[in-house]
Length: 605
Image: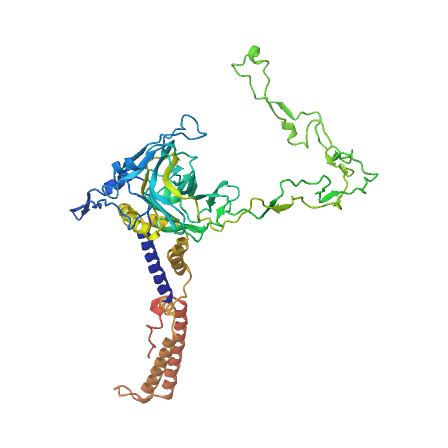
């Protein structure tokens, strides 16, 4: 019973976890047209009754409004507003081929495919293999003056992503910014967002840091996220990307409100913000007499007088003799006697015809044919080229390294959070995939404002996308989706799903102790209780027989019994008991139920 209780408990836990995974995970919808069909009317036959499923009612779009003033927000809900606010680049990309250097990639504000919210619009990148650039000034510049910086926006790869990016560039503030000249060389403060090419999926967070001593600008790249982000590029769903930079020099990166990366601006970027205090002296040179050989040939060693470098490695075996029966006069190969000249053979064109060669049949039974040559053996005098043995180098000074000096460019910036103010937001992208949707940009200094803004926009959109695709999802797809984002769930599923199956198989297949009662029923073997009852019954029968014989009972027959009759009766009883014992032995050996001791009664005279 304990085994089945444990098994039942594991099964219940497993079903609960699987249900949670199925409800929580998002799946890959490879065909958006199938999704549209699922929203239509479906007829289901149930015992001859047709049931019409009503299409899911999509929510109407409502403009998300931040709870308090923000530095920038764009829901892309008006074509007129977009035309007034956003600027397309009219320049070219430096260093690119002239045929593709121009930023002529197409941008469109329109409804996405399979729009989860009726009337919702977004900014969509429509071209493949082109440079795209569009930007917009902020309501006011963000100055890193002690409050958190929060950047949040939505991306949907409607056709998946093969190679390209969907990151944003937060352009450094300038008094007069000409966004028509926005290109890859335009100074930016932060670059943030997803990027993928081939199998390499990235989540960028790069900030440009100014060296306070030299004035040089250097890009600082955040460490790679530990979370698996591959599915965000392939599931064709809308995802929410959030960056938080805090005044305490920490940062957080979130996708769909889930943390995927965090760390310190001081220690979790490459190259680090602060350079090393000491560096190798670039002017230091290795001395000419520096000996970095750890081992050298022994200068005192000389070649032995008997060392012959000319001796070959092998020599002919002087003791070898030709085997008896060797046919020296017989060639190893002879013309095939059965071969015939082809009919189409032309002597003038093909030359004189010769039969192909085959193995000489006379050589099969002989040790060999043809000219005999003695075998070679290793030369005992061969020693090879002599070289002096290696010894420790007494002048060895180790591996040379230049000396270290104080870094003249060293500085210590304890507050890299204080970045260059941000004045505009731009999308400068090259992509081999099209139909990339951007929506609901917001920049604020309050994370709660960004969360409330997402609740009024992305949360509704994500729930609708999940509901639309969940109808065709299998439990195995749900498990795969859940484990892609949370690999540790594999261990849980193995424990609560696979383990019970293994336990059941092991329990059913292992040998069970045979039930004694069942075995006795099958073989008619007498049990201890049966044997005791039978002995008591035999004793009672024996006493009754003696009483009948001795007293004569109340019968009407001859009541006088002689002593001889009594002894004969006792002999008959003893013989009956011996016969019963023999039958008991036969019953134990034979499986026949007719001789079972349970059914046999003691014989009476």
